[in-house]
Image 1 (tube, helix red, strand yellow):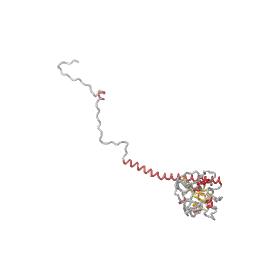
Image 2: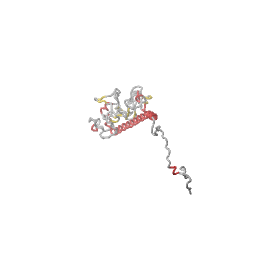
Image 3: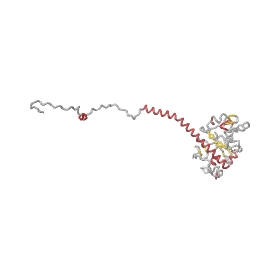
Image 4: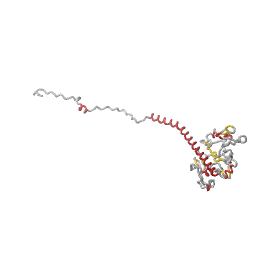
Length: 288
């Protein structure tokens, strides 16, 4: 294009920057204003929320405690039933092999014409007049029977048991398999060879040492005050064949009776304490 000398020079038109996409990309972007107020993190909890969660956990724990306690109680009852059946089976096996029961000569003599009960707590006994003593030995535990059934010949102290030199179990058969507790208070067979239930009380064992064909007479459950239900009929299948003559003669039709005082660790021969109420209600019985 021709430009005349001396004429005023006109500026050339510049292309619009807004129409050029490449130039538009290079323009500086406006800065966003940031708020000075603090922002809450999405992972945080407020104090109210934490207290609410803790309160809910506490309520759930309170609701579960009775359930867990009941489950623990039922588990111990089931364990007692299993151990009781183990004792009955062991005594029956011993009787089958030797045609006698696992008791000492002194215990057999103490029972006389009656059945022998062992394992009663202090203050109770087969004579119904407290613990009975013969030759200076009080038979208020089941250690002699356990030692014979487990073929134990000496105590941890070195003292001989009723089965010293296997004299009561010459075949050396371990009829009873029971856990050793390592002390004299815990469940299981203690260092005194007393077999204790899951609540730490001795199992009560009655054997038909009178060899009566009518049945076995347990110290507690033979009593009318405990077992009578209707005339000669007793609770849990017991019966009294001589009800009109001897009211305290409720029997079990079998050779062995084993039971536990249960979760409360109590039993009572008193009138009003029937087999299904009071201290006797939760007893765990082999014949139940």
